[in-house]
Structures are given as C-alpha cells and as structure tokens.
Length: 158
Image 1 (cartoon, rainbow, N blue to C red):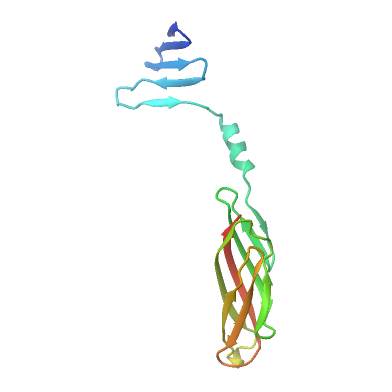
Image 2: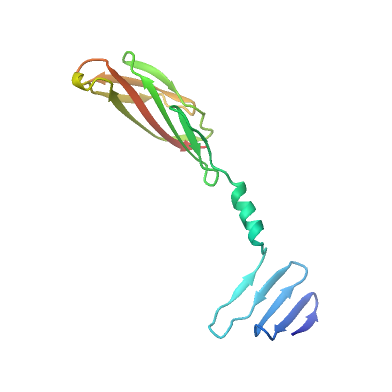
C-alpha cells in the first residue's frame, strides 16, 4: 500500500511494504529516495531493465583484423593497437600501417627475428618520419647478415 501526496508536479510517496519514502518529479522522471535507517540515500534516474543494459553493452563491439598485419580497436576509449611483419630487405624502407590512425601514434615497438639461429643475426632499428599512415624505418646490423624479419607493435588513437 502506498500513500501519495501531489503538489506542483511532484509526488511524495510512502510505500508501506518497503517502508521507503521517495519524491518523484513527474516532469523529469527523476526519483529521489529519502535515506533509510542505514543512512543510504539514492537518486534513481534513467533506469534500464537488464535486457536494455545487456543490449547497450553488447552494441559496443571491439573490432579486429586477425592476420600477420592486423589491428584491434577499442571503441570505448579510441585506442588502436596494430601489429605487423615484414621481411628485412636492405637497410631502409617504409612500413604502412594496416589501418591509418585518425589522431596520433603513441608508441612504436620493433623487434627482429632470425630465420636461421646459427647465423646469429641481430640488428637495431630506428623509426622516423612517423605519420598516422605509417613510418620509415632504418636498420643497422649488429652482428652481420641479412637473414631476418621485422615485427612491429604500434599503439595510437583513432
């Protein structure tokens, strides 16, 4: 059983079963609960059912391109993580991102991989002329040889 008192678009309601009083603003659809005996106070606004919450959460999808040169996009904060593979041919070349960043590149990490472990090939690389679409890369062999490939991980914002 509930008691209701209405004045100027507001309802003061006392619900006996829950022994909670609240004020409802009928124009805005906002409900304010008075503190209970434990001192808890709540404002109820824009309530959703479980199915509405689930559908809103499930509507936000991460997207990805799952390949050797791919990407992962977080729709919540706009973070994009990309990765790539390229054979090392020469000392200088251009790497194009699998998908362009619309804002900025935050970090580029590279590593080498030797196809023949007995050759002991290792090199260092320098990324330069970085844009939202790619970067140029210069390598210098430390131990000699060319039997390597380049792996990259790039982080940026959409």
